[in-house]
Image (tube, rainbow, N blue to C red):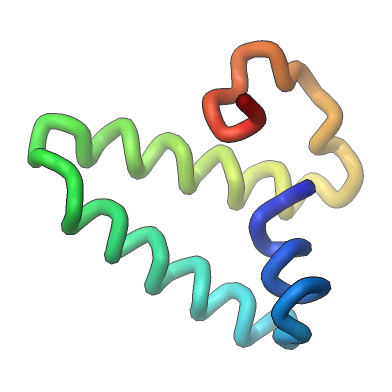
Length: 69
């Protein structure tokens, strides 16, 4: 399940609240990893955003998706 959908369903957040929470989480995680990993964090969150925007296309190839393991 997408992180944004989980935020909406499990925390009862609106779409706007879930997006803001997502941005806060992204900045938090990026601030906690060494600088050389910040590009990887950006890729993770970009992948989450892409899947959320695809509405239902999130079943692509989860074998290579770090966040699905």
